[in-house]
Image 1 (cartoon, helix red, strand yellow):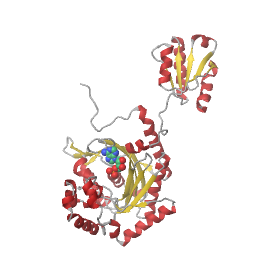
Image 2 (tube, rainbow, N blue to C red; image 1 turned 90 degrees about the vertical axis):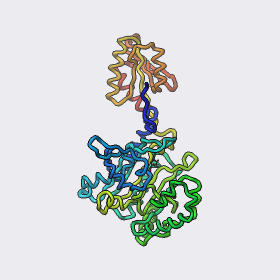
Image 3 (cartoon, protein in one colour; image 1 turned 30 degrees about the horizontal axis):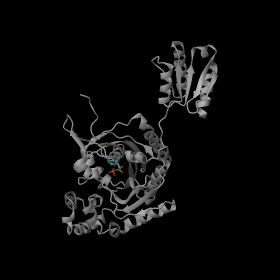
Image 4 (spheres, rainbow, N blue to C red; image 1 turned 30 degrees about the vertical axis):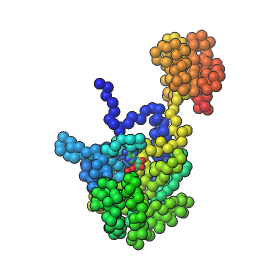
Amino acid sequence: MEIKAIRGFNDILPGEIGRWQFVEKTVREVFEGFGFSEIRIPVLERTELFARGIGEATDIVEKEMYTFTDRSGNSLTLRPEATASMARAYLEHQLHTFDPVAKLYFMGPMFRYERPQKGRYRQFHQIDAEVFGVHNPVVDAEVIIMLIQFLKKVGLEQLELQINSLGCRECRPQYREKLKSFLEKKSFQLCEDCQRRLQTNPLRIFDCKVDDCKQTILGAPQVTDYLCTACVNHFEGVKEYLSMAGLTYVLNPRMVRGLDYYTRTAFEVVSYDLGSQNAVTGGGRYDNLFQEIGGVDIPGIGFAVGMERLISLLPRDKGLVRYPDLFIATLGEDTKREAYRLANQLHLEGLRAEFDYEGKSLKSQMRRADKLKASYTLILGGDEMKRGKAVLRNMADKSQEDIPMDELAGTLKTKLLSH
Ligand code: AMP
């Protein structure tokens, strides 16, 4: 029986990889420019890290984690997100002793046991950026500016930045109670999941996609009306720094981020680039996460961009796959040896050259050159070679010219680089 990939786990094929590489390259350029360094974290962690870090009463921990017991009886989990692991690494390696401020980014696959559907997978990819160790709202603004700069650089233009403040340990419990008592009166209108959320994590009801729940929560009290003075000041600071940088934003008091550890600033970026509204990314501040996983008071702020979603929104002309610069068509064994020698030379110069390995007819070689979308084809015929020449065909306009063999590599390089 043919073995197929697991449901919700995708292959990324050569035809699509150009867009992935383009996004990854842009991440490195933009993030490194803002002073961020890459960190790579393991795929597996102790289950406890996510249970404590993300919060027991979140959808991820309640029902979406890939958790299993290893041969030594340890409970391990495939990472469903990166922030908790990045925070763990920062503590474990005492990065704060080098510099209390750490600006880190990460790219890689995440795993969540969700129902696979278009745009939702069980293995998906995220780009993550986090700043650890700064309370000041200036860094909230800086992280958001970097995110917007990155999204513009990959080609998204119609972006809307939405911001909110979720309060802190001091003021959020009071809001939570207000929200709970508002919703308890209407609990019969809520879906089964939200009835449960009402007891465990009422803020999550804002994220429910069920129409009745969306209607019910419309008149609910708003978190920004219950912020303590410190949170109000922090939020005002974020707004001021965003305005100083010329960024416009929309206040969205109904935006709550799904994970428990968020405090104060929360943000989302919505793209209207493909006509409809698409949430590209979200993030926020989480001043409690380090407390949960390490018992220390270190603030953090960051965001996660879903790669699959982002790539589906890219303009068509971004991140095109690289086609061969040259296809070398040969006639007979001698010319094949010459093609091999030439291709090796061009590869060392960084040019993408292909030739026929199997002794196919010239016609089928030309067909292959077309199919591979080579920019040029070099025809190495026995007679031309004897005359010290080869024919170079421009595959776009079909023009042909003779090129002296002894200048072949140099001529090709000049032509291809100016192409
Ligand atoms: P979250 O970590 O849940 O805040 O998600 C951050 C981003 O990751 C979202 O905006 C999505 O684009 C992406 N994402 C989350 N879950 C999935 C999934 N199952 N499949 C594809 N993308 C996802």
